[in-house]
Length: 144
Image (tube, rainbow, N blue to C red; front, side, top):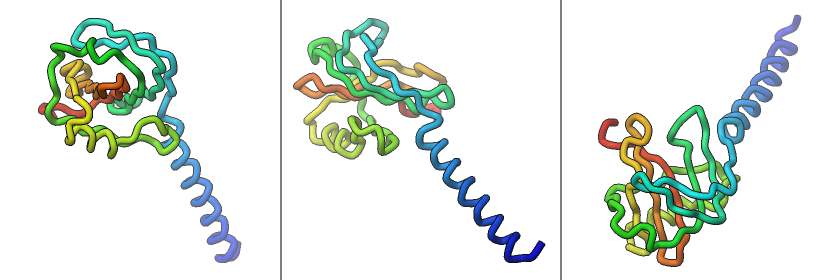
């Protein structure tokens, strides 16, 4: 086998492997969740509509959700001071982390701690806008 053939073969293998790895990371570890009728907020069920979300068994941090709620259902729920929305794959377009974070900081939306230590070291956060739009994710808590 000549060196040229070996190098071309390695380059083809590397290209195929890289594309497969990229697609697996972006699409393979996420499950799309649609039409969830309710979410648990501090131990009680809150009705949601138009739910579109992501989740995965590979990591609790992959939970994301976009939906509508009645903002009055969040009266008395614990506020979350350090809410920082995590990123998503580009194909999940209802969830815009930079905009959600900017709205939290400006006061255009309110972040709530709806489940403390829901999974080991992970808190679930819901951000609610006055018009009823809401976004959900999990983030690391003080344990980590």
